[in-house]
Length: 87
Image (tube, rainbow, N blue to C red; front, top):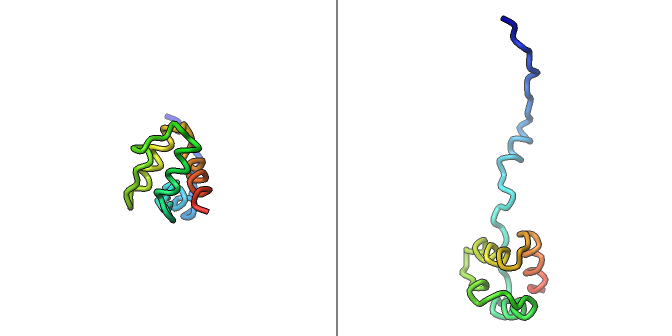
């Protein structure tokens, strides 16, 4: 019986730690007056509803998910859009 020799797989600790980190660590936070920002977003994107833009502190990910779905955009795009309203 012959066994094939497979080269061992070496993974560095840094590579393991990087792989274990979530792509989004949940650090996105809404700053400023959300009422003003949401009204501005609603004017720019008329497909957004009040329900899509409802915001509760600590539930930024849910807000982003609703906007992503409604606008058919990726999370990073939605964050850029929202941040542009925060300035």
